[in-house]
Amino acid sequence: MTTKSAWQLDMNAGPIFVQIATGVRRMLARGDLAPGQKLPSARDLAAELGVNPNTIVHAFAELERMAVIETKRGLGTFVRKDAPVVALRHDLLRAAATAFSAEVTALGISKGEALKVLKEVLDAGES
Amino acid sequence: MLASLSDVTKRYGRTDGLSNVSIDFPAGQVVGVLGLNGSGKSTLLKLLAGLLFPSAGKVTVFDGPPRQNRAKLVYLGENDSLWTWMTPADAETFMKGLYDDFDVDRYRALLDSLAVPKRRTKAMSKGERGRLRLAMALARDAKLYLLDEPLAGIDLLSREKILQSIVREWHTDETILLSTHEVAEAEGLFERVLYLREGRLALDARAEELRDQGRSVVQAFREVLG
Amino acid sequence: MKGFKTLFWLEYRRSGAWAVALIGSLAFWAWALFQARAVDPVELSSVRTVLLVIAAAVGALVPALMIGRLRGETRGGQYQVLLLTPPSGAAHIAARYAFALGTAAVYFGILGGLAWWVVEMAGLTVDASTAAQLVLGLPLYVVGTTIAPILAWTVLLTVFVSAYRIAGPGWIPGTVMVVGTPFALRWLVEGIARAAYSLPGWPILGSLGISEGAYMTASPDGHEPEMIVDGIVHIPQEPLWIMLALTLVLLVIASRIWREVEA
Image (cartoon, rainbow over all chains, first blue to last red; front, top):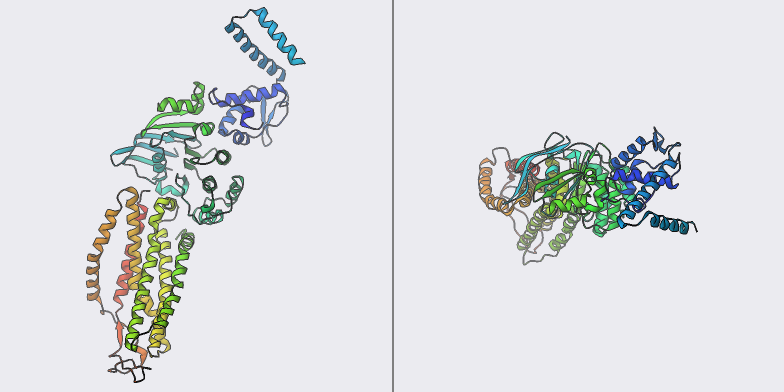
């Protein structure tokens, strides 16, 4: 939860609040954030990232709507203990898979060929 | 409305610094005022501060003329405007004695976080002077902040510190107008952006809406201003 | 006046060195007066008087320059900063003026003391009350009738020029003011001359205790000349009141201009 580069905010990549919300979900999915963990205050995070605090508030509101985080009055903002970590992981994986599939189509490669490449990469990743 | 310009024109000799500009500024917005040199950014801020009078139209700040309400607004001008013999301690005496809304504790905390050295401004770098002036400005508890190119000619580290301080000190009922050339650096800060071109308002948009349409503030800047 | 204290402090920090230098320069004049040499005692007194007059001129010029430095601040941006501070134009003008005038008053007070010394060196002894008149009364009168309005005029000119300089060609109103002043001055002097002595004058050098009809001679060995006066000298009080009123008017006008200025 530190530098701007760690967050990879891209001003050309759509609304910042969306990027922040996605970032939090990604961190949760990857285990960088744990359920029940306290998030930095909107203002602190805004200062770190150099963005308007209202943008962070907007992102937090989104995440609250998605039942990923919750605000406890007087205590701060926390990741929900029942945050759908597994579902998030699957969502992210699915998103990556969709991108892979799009590339496969764009390159005009067969499904069999694509699966072979995928297995090679996964095997290499394991070792 | 915290402040507004109503069909304002400002003439300099034969040229118009601003032409028929009407803008409303509600409370609680951080507004980026963007444009090329000579587009009217400084003129806009000076009109709101009461340093200039409109040739036509009306400028209203806190429901009255700006100069009359000068105690309630903060203006940080482009020029280095402190006396060369002043130290941060002198600046504190100056501000404390003249402004009721000056918070000494906040000032000292800002001097610390902005790493302003305890020297005369004569012996400070431009970046250090800029940070001192910002500390003086942000330590005041006002509702309207007019910051004219606070990042101009200032080193990268100072600029980052300055932007961070602005984010930290801003309260949700305050309105900040910030004009800058460092659009990319400050872009994340703005809720709303105004693009001025040759004295006219070329675009008035919400930053996040622009991004929703697939344009960063920088991109829109390039498009609007050609 | 709100903020006056801080604005005065600002003046002190801005121009304090000038004030100290000015007042310190009196040591030079004291030395010059002491070192002055001439053919005979009468000429010596004249020489010393001339030195005093030059010193007086310096005492008027330097405070005026202290005020005039406002112009340099328009380029430096400090004027903008001051313009946006809450205190009224009157407070700004008053602080700037009070410091310059205060410096002048101290200077002329000490100069009055030097004048007393010159009188003493000419062989005259004066009693305590006349000494008080020389050291305090006469300087205050001089300051009130000449220095105070001159400095006020300088304030007005400076604010005038700065104000219009920022918005446009400042030298035009400034020139108008400078050119118009001699005419205004002539009218003023005539008015004062007419009004003078309508009220009883203030006696000065009255307690020298020298009888009427006496006159100054040098004794043969060159020491202890006797001062001869024709009568008791009275100075008119009208010029003082008129000039102080004029000072106030000039300062008020300057305050109004300050408020209306563009930066």
